[in-house]
Image (spheres, rainbow, N blue to C red):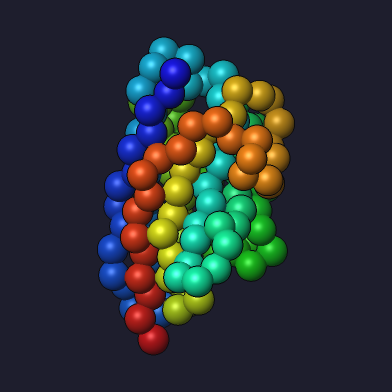
Length: 124
């Protein structure tokens, strides 16, 4: 069982930066691949990016590639989403999710554990 808690959301102007953190409970965090997803008002939840269990591989949605960076610290049981050059269309609730596998999957149904979400609002 893994419990996930996101933090670091907020309001930022377009072009600014935010860093989200996702803290995980449990002693087996390093065996989980982690994903970040987001859901904007009136839209489906979508994959933002993911990182494999040892942090050696990442994957990103095209819409955030080059602007967002995912990293993890297995000693702190935490995964991060650094968001730079934010745009108004990045406004959404951001969720971290975990799956007990070595591979990054973009489809949310393969992630078993989810955080409560963190609101990110980018003003123009």
